[in-house]
Structures are given as structure tokens and as C-alpha cells.
Amino acid sequence: MRVLVVEDEKVIAESLLKLLETEGFECKYASGINEMYNVLEVFNPDVILLDLMLPDGNALNEIQEIRTKFPDTGIIIISAKSTDLDKILGIELGADDYVGKPFNPREVVARVKAFIRRTKGSKEVIRYGKLEIYPEDYVVTYDGVPIELTSKEFEILRLLARRPDRVFSREQILEEVWKDDFEVFDRVVDVHINSLRKKLGKNWIVTVRGVGYKFSKKGDVTKDED
Image (tube, rainbow, N blue to C red; front, side, top):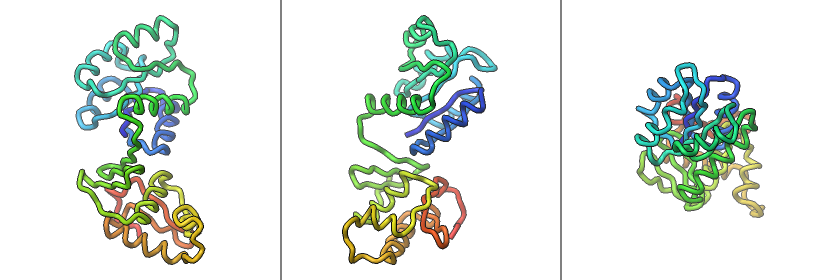
């Protein structure tokens, strides 16, 4: 799922972006109204987190235009203007939710997830660039084209992709994927990783020598790291 964060306070924006990306969202950032529209020309978000008081204007005046151009995109206002009247006005103009500052970034992310559950169903999708992983269905696509994986290959990919940039040892992967199958040796992990790389491309799964493997969110663009 995709989220556009429109926020001119850098610390707030960075905290939201970091948490959203940790949760598997693909994110873009804009610090003002004009920049927001520039991003929207090339990035179609599922949700926009929208601060109101921006350097180039009050984004409250943009909600109806956003709603007209992007009717399926959720708008969650994040603003220090958080009186009951402010919230009512924002919702009446077309926002889907309203969170007053100061806020806990985790609450905002929870509201993003809640909106997606309400509007797009509860089915989880892990998306990085053109790679999409459907954890419940054991389905992987790249640029819309299905990639055939074995069940164990898929479970390894799902484990790593849910926690991008976290390093998993072979032992941890064995415990999570093979669970109580004590006859499996750690080299079987290497075999499955090699197979995944052949099917997905080499850059999605990175070897951390002497430790294990991690999933790279930049698999579409990084050079061969192995």
C-alpha cells in the first residue's frame, strides 16, 4: 500500500515515514501544496496524510480538489488545528479522518491501516516497487506478472519482506519456516534463497556475511550486492 506524507515539519515527517516504511508501506513525502501536486502526478497513493498549515497555503482549501482528482484515495488530516470545529469542517470538506497534534505516530499508522481495512478489505499486500506479495494467498507478482514459488520459498520471502532490512540468521529462518522439522539442516535455507534470487532477481535478498539474510526494499534499483 502507498502513503503520501504532506508535512512541513521535518521531524514529524521523518518519524511517520520511518514507521510507515517499517510496516511495509511504500511512501513519498511533500513539504508543501505545490510539491504535493507534483508528487501526485507520478505517485498514486492509497492514503494521504495531510498537514493543513503549509508554507504555501492552507491545505484545507485543497481537499475537495484532491477528492475530485483522486476519489479512491483516503485523506487523513494531521494538524495542530484540532478543535471540534476544525475536525468537523475537515470531515465535511471530504477528509476521511482527523488526527490532532501532538500525536503518537503509531496512532496515525493504526488509522491508516484501519482506513485501508474499511475500504480495501482486510487482505494484506506487501508492496515494494513493482513487487507485490499477498501473504494470505501465497501469491507473488512483479509488475502484475505472477511468479511461481514453492510454499517454503514463499514463506521465506514473506518472513523477510515483512521486516525489511532486519537480518535473519539461518537458524531463525529454519525456526520460523520449518518449525518442528528437526531433520532439516541450515544449508537448505541457502538453497531456497538461491532459488528465490533466480526467480525474483538477485537484489531483493541480501547476504550479510557471517550472519544471515535480509530483504532490501531497494531490490528494484540496487546493484548486485552479493
